[in-house]
Image 1 (cartoon, rainbow, N blue to C red):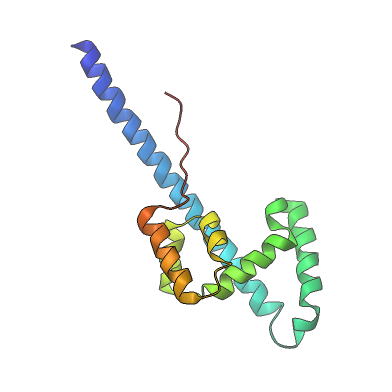
Image 2: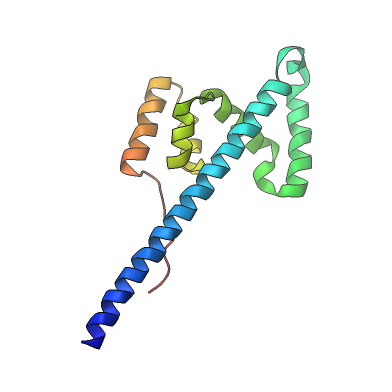
Length: 141
């Protein structure tokens, strides 16, 4: 009887832990995607807007050097350009805000090369519905 109770409690506690880990992961992914979108939108608006477009590439390179020195490789110029493309392809609407809560930055990176907006929206929706590419770390038993 004790073994049955222990097994039941163990199963329930594991489900609680895994559920909490999943929610934390989803919150972190949403915050990361929102940060990257905001960085991309800011660079697009301030650095590449209007007459500044001629020297925008050099500015992005310089920002990449400065930010990556302080915050790591995720902020190199190559990644800043991805953030800029992300903000450009997913304008600040309720749709992208909803996607940020359901998709990770890795999902968005996979969607960026899709040129057709209808196809991109379709694959984004499929990724949400079927949890494509989504990985979850689980603890060893």
